[in-house]
Image (cartoon, rainbow, N blue to C red; front, top):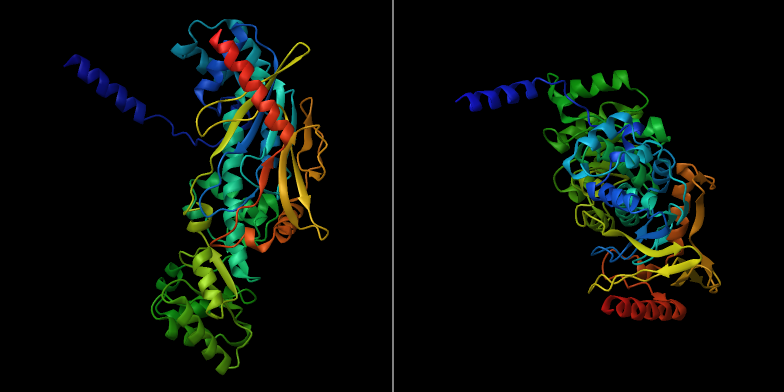
Length: 473
């Protein structure tokens, strides 16, 4: 009984602790990783392995219904690489873990003074990319390249996933504005901010996320909730009261009770009413009825905003059926990429420099084979600049075409002019405009041709034969 009461006392005091926010701070970046990255780092250190290694981050296979990727997340990746440190508190925590009980103090002293000193090549944000193409190529002492894997995969996988999804939603809207409404359904508030950033890169014109507007300069848009309407004596009063406070930016939600009646009440605001929002029901039929009503009342200037579980397929149908909707607010489906909620980005060792030797590394695993050596992606275009095919080759192979991987960090220092978010969005728009229509259709898209160079295939075969011979010996 004494043992049980002691356990209960422990649980009681545990729950009386001050709650932790779990928001990342720069002094915690070092331990935002998987444990095995740090155990491998300790193993390398204890065995004196400080060889220079090259890892490449790429997506092995595109998700279903994703004929391309729109690269995003590089800016946050560069911030991480140039700010990663281990605080005294985090090192104290690591020392207490049983797995490190036989690791020398020298390793923790190494982490105390840790900085990333490597060289990084990357595809600029907003670049259209495809499976197996390196999005990042990182060369540094092997401990450094190992420790950063988890964070880089997390940031690039997520933002690329959402930017790609957003670009499809924007494509379906055919020139109509798409607004990010997704923060409340994102996988946490930090994910909501990154999703707002990625959605803007993908072509959205604005976001409901105020912090994203404050920190990133993305235009911020908001309307009202059903609770506003329900908080007043009746719908008409709620509309008048809202308009009193926001006379130049009145957007009314008209489907709390009855959409048709809501439209009649909204019309009483008159010529200064900016827009109405439809959030439920048959959006095609209701938008047509509301449009006819406003036009008959001489209120042709009033715009219609639609929201409510929208995705690229629903928007595509609405547009093709002539629904007179001017804007789309998209949330859950976009910021969670609901139909393809994960991106299979991987981070693989491709080369080790040992003295003057460059030793190729690769996996033989079935369906998970990799290619050795530092690589470059060469994009072949036609006379108009439209994309024809990509070739993955050796970094200095000099294949005809545009090399896509650019230097972004040299010896631990950023050597790349970081573009503003609006420039990245423009880059994405231009990249997508140069991707021929058959390769970006919502359904039945063709597979864009990505091939390996002959020299790369030969290098892989040679490396595989050497490694098999060593392992058999």
